[in-house]
Length: 157
Image (cartoon, rainbow, N blue to C red; front, side, top):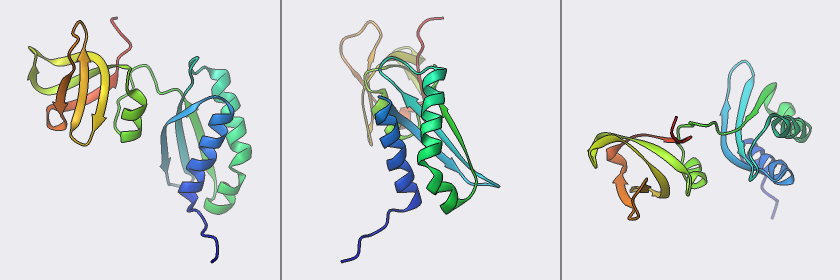
């Protein structure tokens, strides 16, 4: 039986993960946008934080590793960055990555006296999220219908 070839997007994600692992980093978000050239935006995380040097090293390694991508798809531009201090979480992968992190949840209606909740993200699935609010021990379940936005929380200003 002939070996099936991976689609360019599957191969791209696989190659990116391989390069990130070699730098001790993990993939938070991959966004690919087509236009006159293909824009590849990658947000990465590292146990010791993400600095400019790590982004530069990962970018160089990815450019070498992804030479096939330009031959397959055409010209591309690569952007590697940290997730950002107040990144909005949107995709399931981002929620899985954010488990255990401090988040700010903007609710559609008041819950516990307000629409702006801060706490630690405990769980996220198709039904909603579980959040341990600051100064509470019991997690609170919020269905997605109650959630307007979720962002990483850098803490008090």
